[in-house]
Image (cartoon, rainbow, N blue to C red; front, side):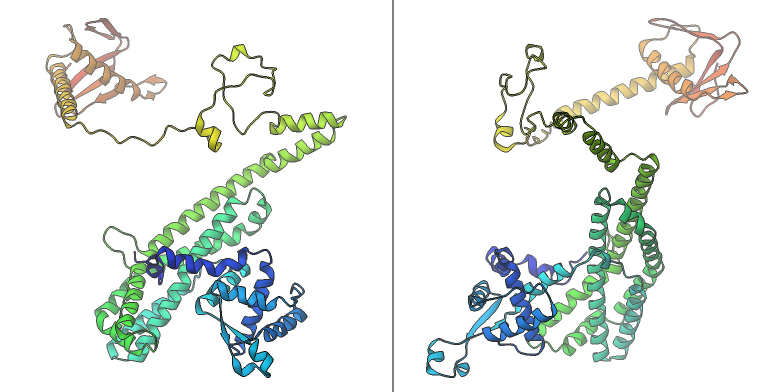
Length: 512
C-alpha cells in the first residue's frame, strides 16, 4: 500500500537534514525546558493576533498575561533575551534586526532585535504541544467517517463527469483531509489500546470500568466498515471510470499553493489519490488499508476479550499479583522483629544472591550449599556477561550449506524406500498375511497398518468394534472373531486374540 501523505518526503532526507530537524527539539532537553515552553507559548499567543515579529518586551508582556490565567507560568528575569537567542540558535525562531524600533542612538547601537517563528520551528512547537495535550480518553475510531467518504467519492465522480474544476478540487481535498484524520485516529487508537492492555495489571479496575464501551465501540466500527467497504470499492472504481488523469489535472489547476510549480502540484495530487485508492481497493498480492484496519480491529477485540476473561478468572479466584503483594506486606508487618522482616523480604525478592552475574560450578558437591557468595570461591565467567551483563548466546546462526549431491542421494533413497513399501503392501494384498512367513518389509507395513486400525477402533454396546487402517496402496481391517488370528513374522508369532485380519487393495474388495 502506498505511504501516507508526506511519508516519502521524510524518508528522503539525508543525515544532515535529519540532524537539523532534530535540533529544533533541543529546548526540551535543557534544564529549564519549562521556561522555554512558556516563552514559545507567549510567542504563539502573539502570533494568534497576527503579531508575527515581536521583541523581548512583547514576549514578557504576553507571559504576564498568561500568568494571570495559569498558575504554572514561571517568572522570567532579565535572561529572556538570552533564551530567545538560544531558540534562534536552534532554528525555532528567526532573529531579525529592526532599526525602526530604536528610539534613540543608544538603542540603535544595541541592535534592537525582533523574533518570529520559523516554519519548521512552529511545527516543532505544535508537535510538543500535541504530545502534552494528548489524553488516553480522546482516542477513538470514527464510525461515521465511512459514510462521509462514500458521499464525497460519489460527488467527486459527478463533479469530474460534469467538468466542475472547483468542485473536483473541493471534494478531493476533503477526501484527503478525512483520510489523513482517519489514519491518524486509527494508529492512535490501536497504540492506546495496546498501552491499556499492557497496563491492566496495575489498574484492572480502570479496564473493567470501560470494557463494555470499548467492545461496543470496536464492534460498531467493524460492522460499519463491513457494510461500507464494498460500496467504497465500487465508488473508487466509478471515480476512475470518469478519468483519473483529467481529475488530477483539474485538481492541480484549482490548487492555489503559490510555492509549488504546476508539475509539483500534479505529482502531489497523484500521490494523494494513490494513497486514497490503496485504502479501499486491494492490489494483487496485498491487502487494502481498510482490510488491514478491519483485521487489526478484529484482533484487538479478541485480545480485549481474552484479557477480560483473564481478569475475571483472577478476580473470581482472588489470587493475582496485587493480592499476593498485599499478603506479603501483611506477613512482613506481622513479623516479631525487624530482623525477621528483613529476612522475609530478602527471601521473597531473592535479595541475598548476586543476580547481576553468576554461574554454576562444574562439580557442585565440592561447594557447601550454606556458603554465601562472598565466601565461596569464584567461578569462571564468559567475557560476554562480564562486559555486557547479558548471558552469552549461541551467536549468529551460520548459513545452511546446500549440498545438491547429498540432497539428490537422500531423495533417491526416499523413493527407493517408498517403492519397497508399496511392493510389500501389494504382496500382502495378493498373498494374504496367513499361512506363510512374512519378510521384514511386509512386517513393517503390517505393523504400521495394524497401529492405525487399533487407534480407529470404536466401542459399540460395551464391545470393541472393527477398525480400519490404510495407506495409499492397501486397506487393513480388524474384524471381531471368536477364534482370533495369528501372523508369522521374522521375529516370531504375532497373536491377535478376538480379531481376524483382512487385507485388500485400496480400490478392490477384501481378501481374507
